[in-house]
Amino acid sequence: MGKLRSRCTQKTVIWLCWLVYAIAYLGRYSYNANISMIMDDYNISHATAGLVTTCFFFAYGIGQVINGFMCKKYNKTYLFPLVLISAAIINLLTFVVPFSFFKYMWLLNGILQSCLWPSIINVLSDNIESKNMESALFIMGITATAGTVFAYGSSAFFAWIGNYRYMFVFAAVAMILIGVLWFLLFNNKPINIEKETLKNEDKTKFHISAVGALFIAMALFAVVDNLVKDGINTWVPAILTEKYSMKDELSILSTIVLPILGMLGATISVELNKYIKNFVSLTTLFFAASTICILLIITLGSLGPLFMLVCFGIVMCMMHAVNNIITSIVPLKMRGSINPGKAAGILNGFCYLGSTISSSGLGLIADIGGWEMVFKSLFVLSVACTVFGALFAVRKRVN
Image 1 (cartoon, rainbow, N blue to C red):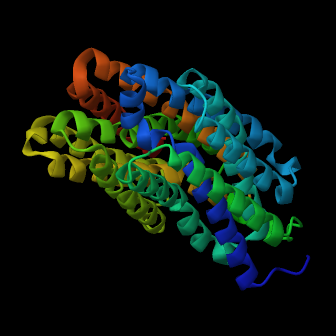
Image 2: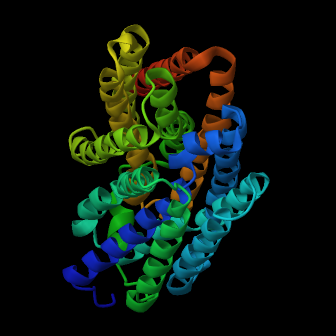
């Protein structure tokens, strides 16, 4: 067995992975965070505005599956800088091109960024010992949250100074800098972690048939999870502006509360997994809590924007917890039985199938029946997952 890296170096790898993925969110949500102002600027409908993010999520979801199979072959020293710098160029072009080009630019952005997550999971699996994996799961679990906070916080600032378009430039500069940092610091040679030990341990926990059933359940959960999570991320600023007449910069700034609570969800998922080892049961618990909060939004939304933000914040907390289980905990905790990069890519691909539906789909529902119909749609989906998870758990106990 090769010499293991020191704990300090393993921590450096974890934080480098965190930086790459969190900063990539700037170049991903630079559009989403400003969607309300973009609709006003170009005088377009919810469905038309949502089509741009639909193109991104469509390309990203398919790319996740493809890159899940390919990620072991990539040289990570060059891959991440190439992706970040290319995404930076797209953001710079978005700053100047007409709106009719946005969907094509974001389609390409989705293809490029789909390389990141499976490769990051692959890097962590190859470089992090089991004793440090809990730290990796926690830190990587908050990347999406941190990235969303960066994106929406920065967008609120640029909206406040009067030009949301500068967000695209800021995102580009940040991604270029982190891409260069990765290139300078990362060593592409993986260490020899205790794979044989992991295999022997995990075979007793994850039988082949159980892995298949688990992946089917997690794939279904993944679609609904990201439909709800990214639907809220994309449309809550517009909801606050249209339903409660908030100013654009205030609605964006208020939305930052949601991903911050999402960070708490990622933490909760790691902690509860120490006591609830069954991934489906744990996921079902979070969907049940989400169902209750969405029902409160439907029945008591008239109490005002603060009440709605609190409820949506709890939903986001639960959905980020589910997302962390699906895309991080399951692949990395089962790395002795499966290829973690492939598992992360496939499951994240299903996540972004939900994201693809959420943007233009929920925008279309809003155009047809208003935001109340959107809330009811999210409620039905959350109930369906809760019931499915409960039935799945009961069936496994009976068998």
